[in-house]
Image (cartoon, rainbow, N blue to C red; front, side, top):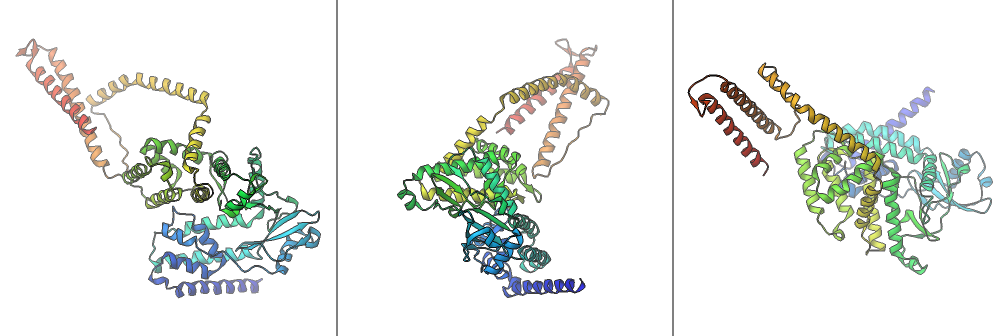
Length: 531
């Protein structure tokens, strides 16, 4: 046991030194550029290439130029030998490979950092694809992540990034996503859930899962022999209408997002095939999820953009995201106002989802707001899907479909009985509170005369708040002086004080006149502040 532990520590120490040597070789002490980061990740091996690929989706945390560079990471990995593949399958499934398949292609269809895929045929003659996990990949990645956490401090110190990039948060997210990808039973559940949620959509499908042959390290699915969605020539030769495909593709994707909250997070052409008049979504290992709350907030954002409701949009951004620092509310409001002014009145055909999502992520990152993982995946997915639709049917307006979908869904999803009940309650509550106002004012005046009036304010850190608070205090003091002048002058009227003007004691006349001037001054000041 001790020898094994010592060997593990030695291996870990050797890998740590290897990481540090790679960092030193790439001259990290002079700073870290997007290109340098990509090169470092490639040199560090498959684990870190996977890190970069996932981080490239987090444009709300990483600057745009870093995300764009990380999308260039090469994912091709030397495949496992057939003996290793056979070992994983037989160990995981508990049966010899010849008992499971009548034939098994030794040359993989594709090889990546976590797994590789082989074509095979079941004993009943059904063609399938078999996804096989690399031997020891979980342990290797876990060790690399542990070592990378140790290196975070060094990276920040020598690269000068400081708090520019929250490496710890990014690593946490990477490890959570990667653990899901390494559990093939999770991908199996994704397939089953996707099929169930889209069972009523006649033109949508996904590969059939062979659950009895699937384990946490081996995934067996139907082999889908279809036409890639971007192979326009083949689609036209087979009688398909490209506009219809584009329309159905976007419609279904919006349904996945807005209704299911469960959507394909990687909708590139290789993951979408056309077979038998159906859109077949494959490779459902990376799926995005949006909570009901987040879906509702996104729905509310569409009409807010169309109507220029900046305040609502600011609230939505703050509710959707997690604030990692102090928010300058004025600056955030101004940025949202500029964003809506720039895109709110643009022609639909001029809008570019990729550019818009990049600006949104850049804005929230600038204000130290990190968005939920599902929203980041959605941004990437929408940008990819829009580019795909623009390629196969450029006459189709992606944003028209988005706006129509959310506008219609908002109307359809209103629970009118609930809204009527809530409105009735709100009306009753407002009326009840309105009846309390005279009594509250009376209590305020009584406490004021007794010197017991208190004003409680909660200060929120914005630049102009102190000025606004002082102005409010001035108005309150002026209002109290006016009330005191009116009450005092009224009491003088009841006395026998002389001299009098039109039967009104002169001190009372001065009091009423001064109260009048102060009132006019307040009214004029309020009108000026509105413009």
